[in-house]
Length: 261
Image (cartoon, rainbow, N blue to C red; front, side):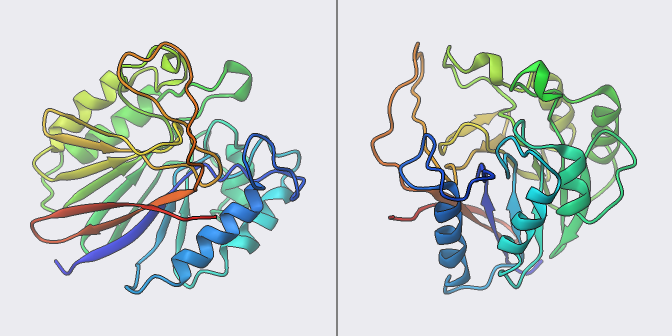
């Protein structure tokens, strides 16, 4: 395979009021616009951009996603979106994915540069809370692909953190059946390059059974955790970030990038 480079970002939390700063130090819109300008100016070409959810923040109407699409359309590469717990999956599918909603999940599969990508919609109805869950039919769909006789490198992505971070306060927001997901992924660990997710607004690598799970800094505001942490701690450096991922025949590179605002 030829080297494949793409951008992973997450949690832009675009709000209806473009001037709202909310919990960040700049508006979500200003932070995302700055990130996209940075990505446009990268010295090496990228194949696509992957946004792993919380694209919008509690959208009030479907048209909010039309404005989001206009914002990302400045990039001259495909953009793949997954919903997060703050998104409306049906609106996101129609407006950002350009497809009719035929089921409750926005799971996706595509190939780029000889690499298989499986995107899992881990969201539950917002009234149930901010945690994630994969339904039995989603795990069965994934298992069929992980158990298949397939030599392609594999990348899996979702919004929620699939495994515990060893931090007590965000445990209720985790993917509730992440252990079941991990067991399915072990079927393909000989070719699984990495699992990508957002949700936690920081860059963390979790390595278990040879499977590497990488999160990404938020596109808007940042959090910071450490092992055994009992309460939310401040992150003084609130610069937004993204991951620049390169896959080669033998190696997987994940560069954690920050943008000074």
